[in-house]
Length: 438
Figure 1 (cartoon, rainbow, N blue to C red):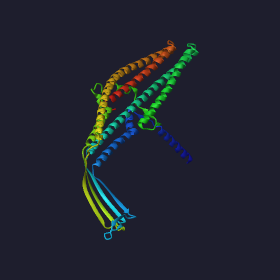
Figure 2 (cartoon, rainbow, N blue to C red):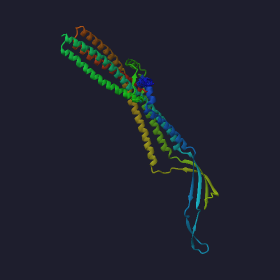
Figure 3 (cartoon, rainbow, N blue to C red):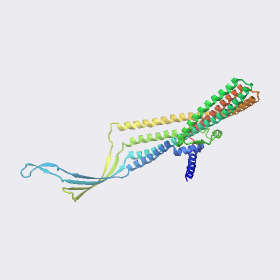
């Protein structure tokens, strides 16, 4: 029995450890989808939309009937005393007036009949909801951009590490072969030391790249809203993303920058400022409110609560602004200045975003050409290194030639990956500049 229990425990521990180490495999699109579902900052911006909906209902409610009630009970410990002249003697005599107990219950109904500020406020609340929605869209766009950039960087780092591992293995083999040639007297000690130095430098660079790659993956996990200790694997390849980056469909669109979310937010701010101006203007108009009041009252020296006396009334209240010593007119002037100012900001931003779009279109075309050229250079450097390695093995090449070829290969690898990364970023930035969906 004890052996069975131990065996079951061992099986459970193995299964649990296997489950704990399950790796989450993610493509770029899967990463974006996961982030939009789980990112806490994005969830927070969704609550702003809910708050805007509640604000609309709140303002709508102020224009609907408002009913309130209350009960007031009083125990008069000492009744008030008044002095009256005696009708017979003419002397002043104190007389207590009132009852010991009093109770008043009332219901009040108030109804807004007309107030220009109410209708402007209701429209402003709806515009505020639109502003919250646009802000959420921008937050979602920014999150997608951050996830995409981090995914790109992690993928490029991973590819760089893979190439470094290949180079490391190649240099290790070259070091062994050179050491054998040194023992046989075909090469000098300095030839061995050169390869060992190149290998050590590569290992240092590889370690730095591993640390940077791990930091990039940790940041990606934060954007995805998952546990930073959870293992993930990126399923995209540099080649596939490079090919996708070569196929844009948004180059040369006239005024495409007008689709930017930033401009939509600025336009929404202009509308909000216009409503603010309208609000101050309508505050000069009269406001009309209706009201109904119903009361039941009891007065007595004992708590019999009988009889009750009824009072009821209804009426209309009209508020008419007459003179504010320039307060209202100066508020209107400030609001007008805010509208003009926000329009200036919008026009300036529109001009700057257009310039940015045109520049990004040129940068994108340049990065496409550069990525193609760097890929060719990388393939040539790989070919040259292979030839140098074969020549060294056959005894017709030199150790120095191999090291130079290795350095050229490393430089070509780095330049190629940087060009691909730049290409992907330029396409992403161009998508942002033209308001494209990510």
